[in-house]
Length: 399
Image (spheres, rainbow, N blue to C red):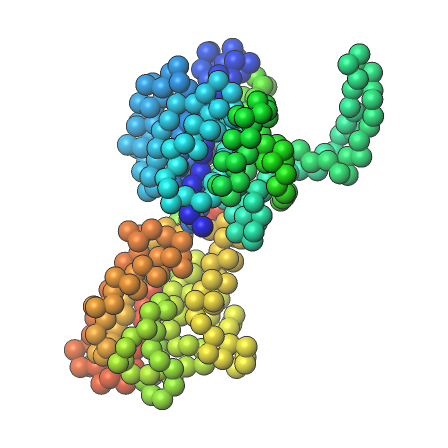
């Protein structure tokens, strides 16, 4: 999946502007940055995210662009960020964002900047459902109030069963081709919609609902300004985890490092596939989680893990990290071996490890060294690896 996000920040927000000294709601500041930047920051920390599109007011585009430049100077998000002017209606602004997505993009999140509190966990639920094959995924909350549908004269026409109703939020996730076809249908048939899922429904494609978040509120009315004043979301806590692993040489498994085969290298004795590097990285990630060690989760006495690919074990722990709200930021690894020679394979190892961790290659460092003939590695009896993984962890509710 080549995933981008479109952040809609082109609205006029006239109801709220009157209560905010004329300022549009997407430019109101919270935590030292405009609301749209808070959403950009959250989306940029999602491992699958490849880039962001910011859709800005066409009648105030220069000032908005200068504000984005100011934010980028203070905090580099580490992803491509493209700006484009929006349109008169919400769906026009989405269409403007779709028009500047790169050719490689095949999936997109569409998010309203007026919802600055969407969490990484919510975004991950959307992405997981999209990856599982849903062409459109939206977050929804159960409706707790009784809802009435009215006649034109303001009398009640019916009372829908609220058990079958949800209140819909953003971000919303889409297969890009599906969303583009839905917008083309809207343009051709002059359909007006309040969200993109409605257009996909008109296309006849299924829309999957995942649990939303009560905290993912939309800043709409003057009384909502209190949410910005009172919200005290503590900053994430930096954490680091250290991993170390060793494997002996001998008749056993062909050597792989981060899943990359090492032609001509000694075989390793191991219960799994013996990927010493991924074992060290998995232990380091468990260290960030405070989750014990790899032997506790995948014991070598369990026949299920006989010759299992270590990438599967790492993927399981990466999923645990996501569920815990962890945002990986960097990985630094060192391979220690007299043989084989690692340098010809370092670039491929780095690329593979970055892909497995959902990090850009610039955030992964791979080193290799020998111990100059000393110790068991120097005597060509085995190989070892050490790893340091850093991440941002949600602050505890009651520090």
